[in-house]
Image 1 (cartoon, rainbow, N blue to C red):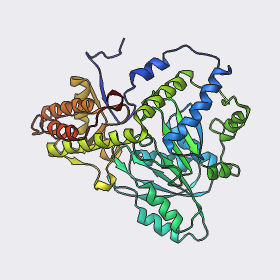
Image 2 (tube, rainbow, N blue to C red):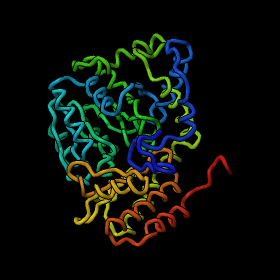
Image 3 (spheres, rainbow, N blue to C red):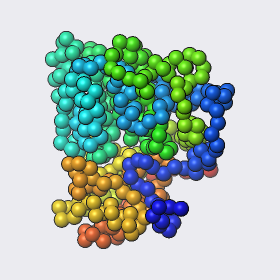
Image 4 (cartoon, one colour):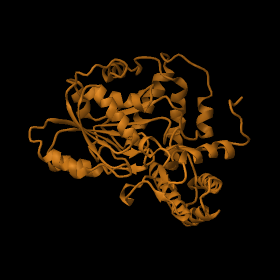
Length: 401
């Protein structure tokens, strides 16, 4: 029984956790089993090879850790760095802020480059810091690929270009929690040393699995890193990888089978097609926002996110009321504005196993809510703008041709 029942389905449009597709739910609907039996290591071995495909890496080593994105952050930091190491990190929203807090609490020398919320990482400042660091005191660059609080996507290719331009050996650590498997992400091509994501985002699984992928350079750095780590220690995983049993502690059996089903769905659609679908969903949402006469929190087109849109409301409207009314009246879940943008924006998540018709239902609900709270929206305006775009761009479903 639901704690708070509402008829029909809940329309879940927060930027994670996201909708779980039925094949994944069915795959996870199974009893526990002995993870030391031959079956689970055999499943894990194939998963570790297949997970590399969503990072677009052939040389990376993945770790499937029973944790959230926050734990994956800690894994990336503590396995590659030592207390006192200087890192350059970018503050552009709530989740980059939380990662910075973790970096400080882990006793790193944190060099923060701050931007206005709604802007991307200031890479001109990064260029200046790299050019003046002839002694290579900077040990890592930490950057959130897609800042979920503001709907801002950073250009990782440019970050790599700058590191190469100045021949700087700093590690590149990337939070890809709300980007990997939805936005263009190329671990090998962009020279990313540690990339991480969470199961509850574009993979469309329940929360509970932090997925980290480490480059050979990152694995080498882990040999000399002195940060304390126990639960997140890569060396424990690597020891069991060599033994062929893979798990230093008990995994979530159900999540492993769910991950298998989720990857199968992604590979059936084709990863590039998944990314193209998210591009359409992002564009359709932005067209709707424009038709409503509202503004995107993201200040330049180059930073627009295709997994989440943060919508700025007029000063006389509290965006928290929009989110509250969506849930109470229409069984629609939208994302709250967080921290500096609390009460000023609401967020529409459009990532994961989601199609255009589902999104149109969300946009229709948002229009009714805007009308409810006194914003002079013309009902159907945003839906029409998005629908016209989708009608001209949605391809036939390959498996049904």
